[in-house]
Image (tube, rainbow, N blue to C red; front, side, top):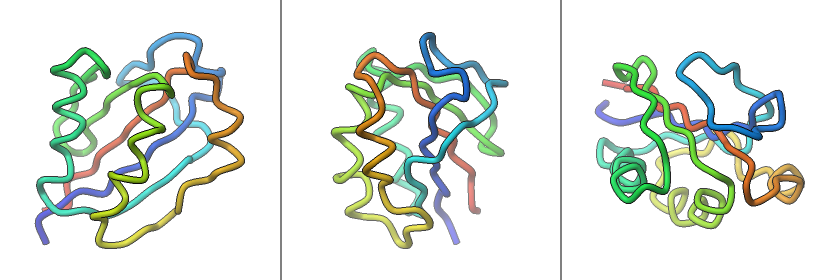
Length: 110
């Protein structure tokens, strides 16, 4: 299977600053499996300055983005998912302030 397992999580410290490659994950907001092209939106967000590519080699690759940039995109990102592991945690997303930095972790499934 060529694709990605993608997880969007809060930072345990509240996300007042961008995550790093080593920042531990906090509460999960959503997780899904998607085809190989499913990582492209995160490449694009980083290229547009709406996310930061933290690196990684697919085991995992990590990004960080503010909630105001990422959360509105979640429904569209999930619309082409193969399988949802964790649907959007609506109560948790409502707790996120727009400037909170979130973690995106992408695991290569190939």
